[in-house]
Image (tube, rainbow, N blue to C red; front, side, top):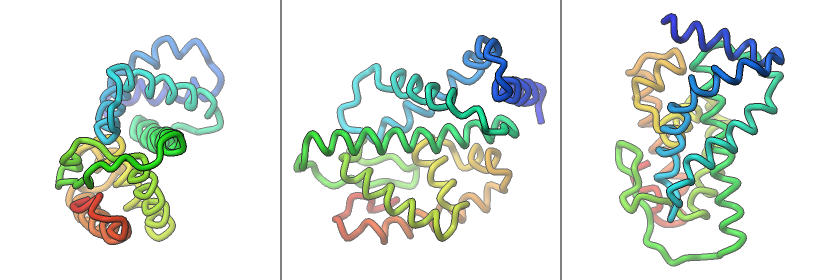
Length: 197
């Protein structure tokens, strides 16, 4: 583990123990990576304003601040929890938008091997359906569901996901391929929204 990872782990543990002053160094240490993750996740939203990534990161920090009981193990654990919370925030936002505006008549989304939708977004109902399928996958195989969270919602590469989960890149790639096919099968009844997920 690198010195930088060790320092971040110590800061996370101090923060969890109630040392609020550590936030002054912790937030700058993780902000850029969380901002990148948010930008990647928001590629899947329709008409996100330019400030959406900043807003998502601020909402994420508010949720993380309320998670004092987490015993942070390391940098990868922190970003794994952040990816899960980001997914939850995005799904909640999709549900709110869906409640406000039903339908939309947009053409179906297709995801390629790099998890980027061909039209660059998912409609709220598509994201909600993907989340339901992901919850089902999680009940069957939590590890594969985590890989989808890291890859799709946090925008991590195969190698970054492997590092975060302490797996080999070959294992992550194999599980990612399986999860994409499984999720495509589960959501295909609603059209071809996630043709290549």
